[in-house]
Amino acid sequence: MIFSLIHKTSYKYNNAISYCHNLAIVKPRSFKGQELLDYQLEIEPKPTTFKENIDFFGNSVAHFSIEKQLKELTVIATSKVKRCYEEQNDVLQSKVCKETTLAEAHAKLKIITPTIIDAKQFLLDSMFIKNISSQVHEYAAVSFQKNRSVFEATNELMKRIFSEFKFDSGFSTIATPVDEVLEEKKGVCQDFAQVAIACLRSVGLPARYVSGYIETLPPPGKEKLVGTDASHAWFSVFIPNFGWVDFDPTNDQIPKNQHITTAYGRDYYDVPPLKGVVYGSGKSTMSVSVDIRPVKNDNQQQQQQQQ
Image 1 (cartoon, rainbow, N blue to C red):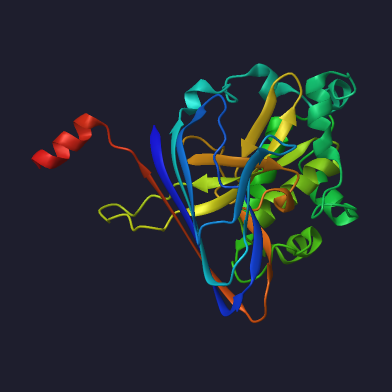
Image 2 (image 1 turned 30 degrees about the vertical axis):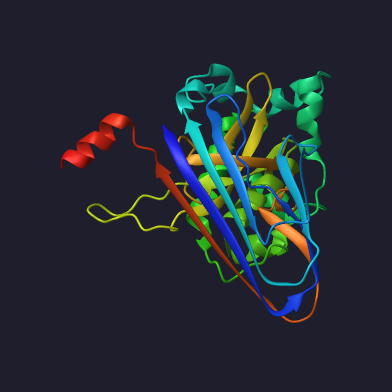
């Protein structure tokens, strides 16, 4: 399945700013099961300086600065992505994935290989997930026991967060502590992902934050509106001898073709879609829209034209 994706972010400033420097992490990754076919990044006003590099986690990061006065900034990322979940390792059919216990995972994580070393960095404290509390340990312990399958326990953790937490876009900010989200049991996708990551790290399992997009489908018989899709976040757990397995606690599902991955990090702090600094005074307003649509092939386009 091929998707066309447009992510537009706009800032309006009450007073003109004299300089800004930004980082954009909006370029989808390529891996087995996901292929980036086309990508363009439009920035208005035109940047004074611009460069792209690959960060420590393998994500593509655009750096740009604008060294003149401006009252508006618009960043539009346009991508074409091929998704084929069937090409990825089938987590539901893998005996290693489904049957590796927590005790076995701990033992295998002690074996020093490049893959294990790379995974174990996701056990470390990160900016928004550190000094993991007893509250997090207790919440994780409900699902994780040493002789239970890591996959089964993580799947249960995902379902618990989905059923016990309320989606509330007005509750949290990017810096709301994990303990506060866990206590209040509400937040947004990034909060749910970070609660799950904290739980997994508390029981000694590497877990990473996944930034990306999810296609939303309109109700039956309704037209899909432009800009109604969303930037999204979920998490991955590392199961030794198998690899990373994604879980989406916001939607209670293992991500497949409707999930498009942009970046991996330790938590949200590593991979925000856009962040930066500005020199100026006054307030700013930000608006974001995301649109994801399947790309029609030639036969589909001809059939639509004939109708």
